[in-house]
Image (cartoon, rainbow, N blue to C red):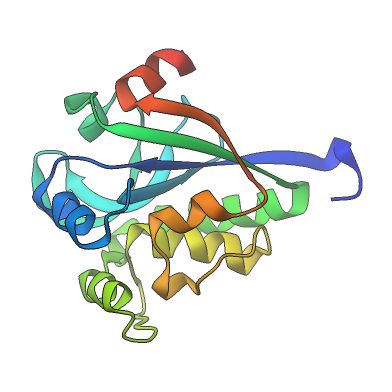
Length: 185
């Protein structure tokens, strides 16, 4: 990013809910955060991820929009979270936005990659299935394929905790997701 006037911001939100699936991931990995999302409009804007489509039911799951203070996060404002920002060039920002928008426009084609989650946990190689993602795989793929950041693992082996260790990201908020909604307002 040579020209500072050409800099845009991408946001990465990490959370850990009290759902059975999140508890299982936390128990197995000891990670502080078990879910990741990517956003473009700041803390108040939508974040995109792979998760439950209905806030009250685990399945079906797929590509969703989520916001602090609404949907699942609105029902569970006590969820711990961290918000990071990543500065990227205008062209990288536009590339990631375009990819996410195209996927979201065709969101019914995309599904949650439960097998990929298990494979990533056990480090069973890179189980990549067409149109299937888990949350951190999706965020990592957007960052890696656009050249926005180098990550410690390939997207199919990524975990939400990986984003905390990317040199280019900067934490801008830590607290409860309900407080993030108020902070962003």
